[in-house]
Amino acid sequence: MDVFVSHITEESEIAKSMKEWIESTFLGQHEVFVSSDSKSIPAGTKWLDEITKAITSSKILLLLCSPDSIHRPWINFEAGCGWAKAIPVIPICYGGLNKGELPPPINALQALDFNEELPEKLFQALITHLKIARLPRINYGEMFNELEIAIEKRTITPKHIPSDSLTSNKSENKLSDEQIKILDFLAKANRYVELPQIAQQTQLNPQRVEFYLEKLSDSEYIHASYNTFEPTSYNLDYKGREVLFGMGLI
Image (tube, rainbow, N blue to C red; front, top):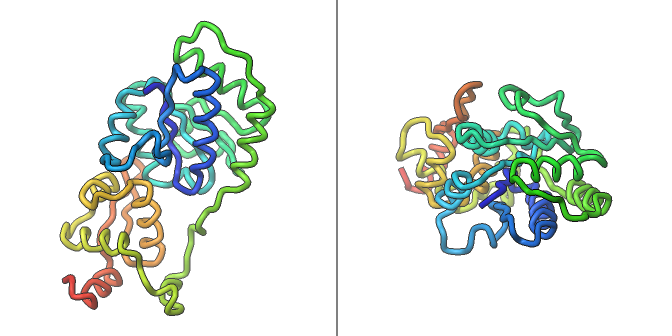
């Protein structure tokens, strides 16, 4: 693995577009890992193991940063892994976020803003860090247009959901089996647990776990503990315990 693209589930099309451009430009000689792409993680494999292996073997990590992704725990976890491995970590800012607005410690990294110069600057960074002697000819304008379309199409769940939003009507009241599985694990753990361990113990896709954790936290089923210098951790809240009790799980 040469390049690891870190992203949130809702922005997977941006990551996939970037993967296709990089791999096709270098004629498949440099592999790009995107966790939402079935080619990167085939069916039947363990998501967390594959992600860990990909980060460990990567030579450069691209961090897709938007106002919606930058505070997500999984993005920060993967960025920290790349930092600890001492490989180049390049934040790519878009969707209304520019590099001057990145929070610490990510703002200490050399970031790129999304504009018409991004494709060329990105490939210049890639050939430097991957030690590629010559950059093939590439249509930067076409790449920019494709990424721009992917950014415009992304769908983001609103970050702040009213506490009664999941109980406002019967259609919204039902939690998914995956959400119940997360609540059940947190009940059994009976302590604050970080995202990677939740994903590993529930055997769920880490990015889906991240998505559900945010929804459950916003709806007060679980409590999220935020610390500037540590990964976010989660514990079951009263509302989540009440749901499990009603289902006979506790």
